[in-house]
Length: 150
Image 1: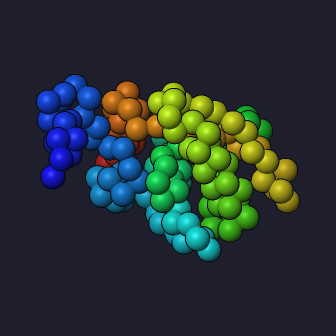
Image 2 (image 1 turned 180 degrees about the vertical axis):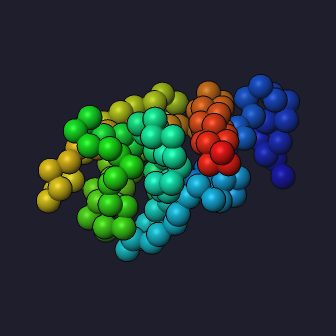
């Protein structure tokens, strides 16, 4: 065990409560559904999480990356067919591209992808593992958890 394995203990202000899709599902299992594409595990937030009808984005993960997805304003992102492999693949390709291009920047990045056959554009925002993003994820999902309990 090297020094870097426990380095986070010396900087608790930088501790990330949630930084991976697995941590997200472990903490909020009732909020997410997993599915397998050919070479990629996909995790997405269930539609029932928009119970209040006010949420305009939802969480979407590949095996190594947490993102949010939102619509271009022409449809409700919660109505997107998350059982269609074409939808999942289109979004996953964009997620992986964003991760590869931005993994060293620690900055949120948003790009748009079009889902062929649906005439829908999806905005994908890459959430790198930072303290701010971890806090945002927890705050958002705790708020949604409270809405579900009402």
